[in-house]
Image (cartoon, rainbow, N blue to C red):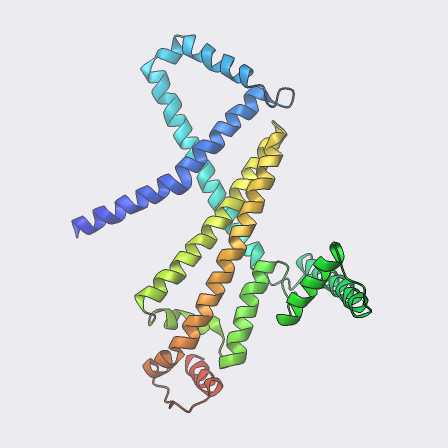
Length: 294
């Protein structure tokens, strides 16, 4: 047991170091640069180098206690920044998965639907021009391609964000296919999944959490723009990377959840004592499981 606890503690420490402390130290370094350079000299490396040389020449800079205090302060600041980024990441997850039932998020849903209708209208015009013998080019070709993709897979916005749409569509497909709500059934189904599928779902969830945490770091870098305007550029790049990673992870996570339901709903029904044969329709089995869990 002691060896197990030691191993768990080591893995937790490694994960804390990688996801919180190292990223936090990078943010603390950016904070120091922001304070020292400011808006007037945003890229003056010589100014920063001169400040570091001044610290090195100072007697306090050569004191072991002063160095130890500076290191400890930096680590504490990095840890605090990491905790703040994690909290902001949780807020991003709630925002990405929001239903948009009331304002102002419902306004975002309506705006996305209007935007999608405008895109569809431009695509229809592109098809009309193509059918009349005019070859589309440039933006017209791009609109035609996007319309063709939508014809293969129609997507009507139902949530304020694309990530929310991914999760919503997965739940809708599961309900349409199996007449089953994921929320009450998932904890029981999770207990029956094989280790390989569990590991895949856990990995996708961790990737999604990491992307949300990265979005939290973007907010912290945006705060540096008050002192150092390039912080806004860094924040925009970090946020774009985070959103892209979150969409990929959310798509994979939604697909894996659907796969788990498709492959192991029968196992859940058997463990719950719901009888069903090979010829039992999936919808009937899902409704029976839902009644048992009600």
